[in-house]
Amino acid sequence: MAGSQAVIEIRQLFQLADFEEVLHLQQAIWGFPDIELLPLRFLVVVNSVGGHVFGAYDGDMMVGFCFAIPGVKRGGQPYLHSHMLGVLPAYRDAHVGRSLKLKQREEALARGIQLIEWTFDPLELKNAFFNIERLGAIVRRYHENQYGITFSPLHGGLPTDRCYAEWWIASPRVEAILGRPATSPPAPMVRPSEAISRTSDTETAVGRPATSPPDPLARPSQAIGHPSDIEAAVGRTPPSAPAPLVRPYEAITHPSDIEAAVGRTPTSPPDPMARPSQAIAYPADIARIRTEDPRRARQIQKENGEKFRHAFEQGLAVTRFERGDRESSYLLEPWK
Image 1 (spheres, rainbow, N blue to C red):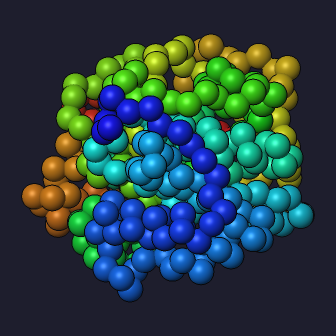
Image 2: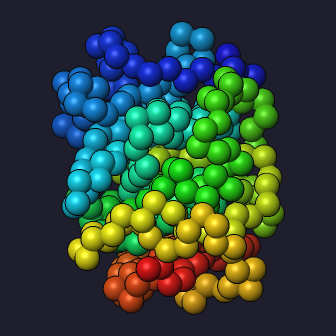
């Protein structure tokens, strides 16, 4: 049963046969040639060294997946890098991407892991909205041509410039946005019939987002990224009040560890008058521009990439994302 009529179940994967389905979905979602597919043996290793692999099922059919590999920050802090998340286009309005991310968070918290990271294409605006506004991730790093130029039609022949999303999964910011404390029980099976819309790219790959007028009060749907990029977008979740700009309380400082999260403590009240100190804007129709005018898309990508890098060098972080009819903006503020 496809799309909004399905009941989606998220399962952790351990068997070779399940991993083979993930291989097929990579081809169906990104259109990669065989040489660019992540091999079966890689998923076996991920599963055996402290990572995890999840599949989203409509009955017996896998319609989405995600996986993360373990890592260690300077200073010894463990974290997960969510390397790929993808959802079949027919299920893009079923909240599949969000459900996969919440399952990742649940499993990581059960092991005492506080941070999950992934990369995403800043040109994928719905993906960005999902990551920042729906999940509560922040961004403090930008990497030019992270994965090289690929053959995927989703990437349009452009360099794979990527933002790094930091998802501090037990922080007050994330708990407020998700409306789900770190100690909450696992979410029930997802019923896609409640979905509204979605997004796209590497950690998140699901195809191009459905066209609909932006809702300034709504939160993102689904992310989509390069297979090694990470979070595929899925669709808007039920509207909720915007989260306060509360920084993660798990302070993990190291002079050269840019991913460390410090700042306000859990008891620090948000400042309702605080305003972002910088905005980096993209045309709302950047997806069309990427397809019809790749040269202009590359110019926008390059100019904004320089703005991101300069802002991050100044100690700013992306903490909000604002959508508009003509342009959408990444909003940045100081982040210690």
